[in-house]
Image (cartoon, rainbow, N blue to C red; front, side, top):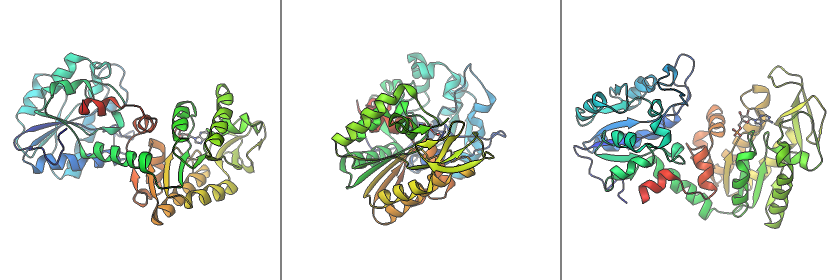
Length: 396
Ligand code: AMP
């Protein structure tokens, strides 16, 4: 495989699959540009090597072709500012006009193509669509870690048109090497912290993690399925009744592998799902009917913080509560702060998954952890040990 550093980009057009699937507000302004910033080093490398850049990405989940709110034109100015040059825009990602724009690009310039998912061939992995896309560049670079778990036209199928000219961008490379380093060579004790709403998508990850870690901390909505499975009263908290037996199995599996499992001991509960709700602090297994746990409580904060601070490796995915509401953000904040402290004491910390990244950015702690992954689903699937199609397509 060729590396970015070795490739000669002089007078080459690099077609880069980036992951610009970022949140925009109602006025179509960029709300969080973490993923755009993460692509800059790859783009700059091509430009400095005397090449030009054609960028392609998806944004959101358009259903039937063009949708104004999902147009990548909304990112054009922001990207121009970050790169300090005027980025061109093509209102399609394939076709004669876009191809003429791409072919006419002088060295040192950048063209952003319209949302790939305005064509259904993208998610279907359509071969003709992939071929049409491939004409936009002389060399293909995949730098879209966040989409690399999808076998789509632009992430995987397209590579067959670049048998000798396909590479990983710097972001994808660093994602893989950082995740590999914690999953394969973690310093001990190694603590994984999982939170968020859904337990369903995380069962396989928990099983895989139990082979590698010393401590498993579970918070957020997903903790309540465990608490209920153990016979606790969780009131109207979020639970998945179909997974009660599995939750108990996971507890037993953790014990059999000598992994210490930490669940919340208390909870901030509310009488409705609102920041204006009435609030109480109760023991986690004594939540009255009509009330729901929306954050971990103060005793849990102390318990979790203590475990995290004693760890040499920390992996965090998923908030401890409904951190989007200020009354339920304290638990997530305390975990983020504990990770920052552990990191400043020499631990390696990796934070990933849309919501944990949003939380760590909101708290201004993103530069206080070792690595912030841009991947959500891709990160989780990679941790699970699955082969990512976007990665495999380059390696094959
Ligand atoms: P996930 O997509 O599974 O990572 O879940 C992230 C979401 O979980 C966030 O939007 C949080 O607001 C939500 N969440 C965290 N804790 C709770 C809770 N105790 N009850 C309901 N939702 C929660």
